[in-house]
Amino acid sequence: MEIVGSGFLATQLRPLAHRHEDVVVIAAGVSSTAAHSAAEFARERNLVQNVLRRCRSGHTVLFLSTASHAMYGSTPAPVTEDTPVCPVIPYGVHKRDLETMVIRSGVDWLVLRISHVVGPDQPEHQLVPALIAQLCAGEVAVHTGAHRDLLDVTDLRDSVDVLLHRRVRNEIVHVASGTAVPVESLVDGIGRRLGVRAAKRLVPGPVTRTLVSIEKLRGFAPDVVARFSGPDYPERLLDRHVPTYHGTVDTAVGGARCTNT
Image 1: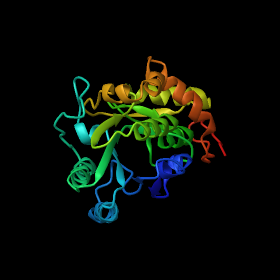
Image 2: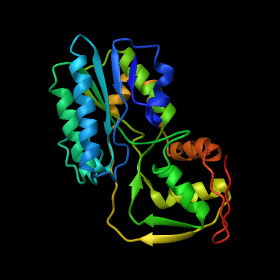
Image 3: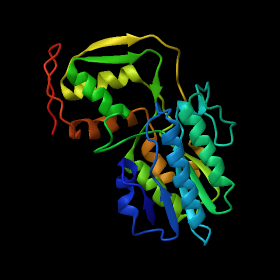
């Protein structure tokens, strides 16, 4: 497997590099749902175009997309992969357009729409590291009504391995837990594990709750998806990753103090 990229997801997929030799994984580009820079989007678009051009000789392109609110907006019930998407922000529009480019390229492809991945050494702007930093600084902004589907990066990696081993091609597949957790609950859970109490600054807003179906993934990788079953999955994920957070925040604002190195 060739892995294009050097960031968080690319690094976490490295253990699979010796497998699936006919696959090129695009694990590079814009990583923040808040991104709106035309220059950033253009760089990723050019990267994807270049990879597709050189993969016309028999390789499969694995493209990592998003199953977040950016792609679907709020959903009253779990949506399947063939549900018409309705991107609500530029990041979602950008990922949808890249998916279309991959699908129409003429190469074999696999598009994975993934939720909010959690794991070691991830960028500070992503959800869990950002919440940890705010908690340790003494105040955390909580958007009322916001929910997030968290996925352990190990479960993402194992899902990728199984899907490629089973030769799943020319499919869009959700890789997510299928459970959307209120962000306020995540803040409380992270705070308990850090032993930190911080002030909450409530930011009013609409309910943003995106539910995606993982039944297609369950059909391809039932043993991996079995790990997602049960309401305790988000708690187990936080148990695993919060204590090993590899950042350094050393402050004493509002009585909070954290140092994790």
